[in-house]
Image (cartoon, rainbow, N blue to C red; front, top):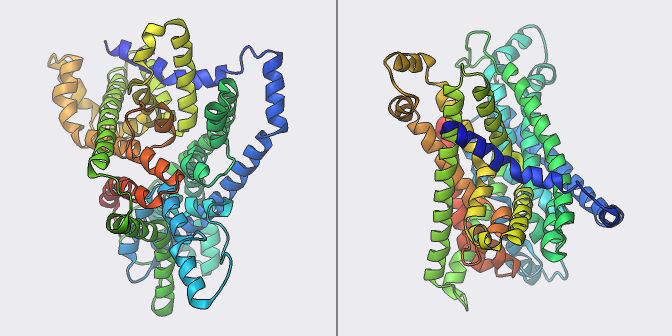
Length: 539
């Protein structure tokens, strides 16, 4: 039974990617002519704008996240413990939600520019359009820098203090200690964090579409939904998949080096204040300001503006959306997120159990490990790629067996399938971490007492994995609530989620109406931030 589940899971997880890659097979002369047309027209623009966006976001998140991590890990200043936790808050703010708030606040007809023109008699636009490439770079940088911050902070807090103190005793100055001790320790974490940021940036559709950017992700949707070119969309998706795969390989390589850099070969000296720079007076206030700025830009300002928009719409809106409609959207989002969390966690439990029970069973162990690896890579696959990879085989099935089409078209089955591929790795990582804390001696003792594999899993593993399973379910739940690209394409016609509704209202320039569903997404996004806050051990 377990082996059958593992094999079926492997086929289900591999199908979207294999479908996208298979779009290159059997290309005829017309297909190659169309691909040459893409190369001569839109593809250079997609690659160029995606490259500029990625470069800007990489530099921005590197400076913001790396700088904040260095301040918190290597310096001592008033309010450090508070800012250490507050710097995680932008993780709860999806970039496309922040885009709605900043657009309403800073656009030409917005209240800020209008008030300034009225007060000082100025004319014309006072600054550039927010919905632009530089605006997208700023948004992604202040919303995604926590990936860099978390990994770099962990790497520096592991061993930087004692080694920095040793370098100081050997006569090294402050800048030399930073350059030759702290930076080499942090380099793998910086690379891994930037790679994660780039994967999130390339997978985004909400900001790119709302700002009118010509990125690879928006190109995939344009080719599919506007031009009706399925093969062209799949081929563009394969290019996007290739770029994301490069980022994933960089992240995995950096993570391997990060584990080495984070090893504790010597006794802990973290509780000692030696090796850390004390910042008092003006320097301490500057450090606090440097930590406060990304929190302000990435969370407090957009969240506050969304609250303002929601309150104004409730008080003065001419066409207020009924509470029943908001309740229906919220209920649809909760049901979808709950179902996705349930099935994803169950699949992750089966795969983790297969690896655990197959330790000495030869090829079964390698099969379970291979499927688990495939599931773990799913988080790096953009939602656009998964959507196209599922719609192609569904279309093929619909053409040959129309009676089977209702099982996939217009139902939640395809959407749940996409979520299994996209977020299964999140659940699997949490459950594998829980299994790592269960000694194998318990399994051996249970087997010696005659326990079957299922009894072992139910009576021994399940109680010990309860916290890891709950954490996995919460993380998947929150990710599904925020997910936009795959949901936008695969959802049933009568089932709009909060993310889809917020996007559609913002696209129609009904930003005040989009504020309430956007705030609900942000509120749910605070759950993993709270979990991380509790898990982090402050010094």
